[in-house]
Length: 289
Image 1 (spheres, rainbow, N blue to C red):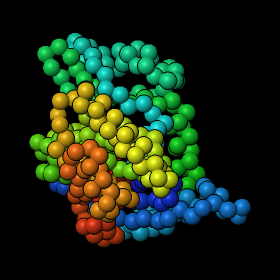
Image 2: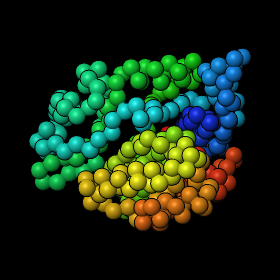
Image 3: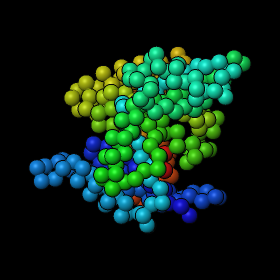
Image 4: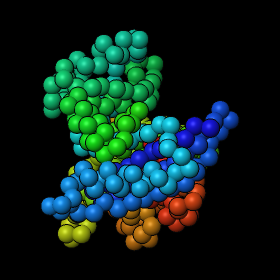
């Protein structure tokens, strides 16, 4: 069996999900988390991150065959774009011109990807991602310096697209909103029947909550949900809370009040390193794996 490590790096900790994969299925081997101490004159940020990652990798049964990490969603543009159905075979040629008028950076110096998330008799709807190639190079350089050589980089909230392979029955025929409130940003992703059809990374996270500006986060989430509803017809029936706040009853209740949708935890598989209550904290790492 191949061993894949999905690794999430936050300002406070490194989280990993070790997933064993084979032709006939998968098994979550374990979850692991290592804190990242504050840098000092003696210990640089890179050195501390490298040490934390080394400790995390050592908790696997063996070194992973493949590592998948993520790029901060605030460094990329995630957009829904409509294109005529007739250009389906030429999307790669047409898309740069479509995005060039709306991106806040030079499309000629960007890396662009997409997936088709909808179609009707005349149009295709694409979820696109674009980021300056320098952002990818910088992220890979940072990861390499920390001792990681990822095969893939997911982008921000779109990383939750990986939940479709882990939770096919839970996502089948449903539209689910996944929210992950991080230290300084918040991921917002909608999965319809297992496919990520909308993704945003919002500025502000626990830093707003801790500085008594929670209402700003609430308004940002409400605006993003309104933007989703203006572009997509599939109405989310439940919120799945991921990350550090997923264990907090108060956080789930607050999200229900703010968005008017019942909120629960991401039902990721349990494994050594996490129980039913704490496993949702590793949802992004699990999705990456």
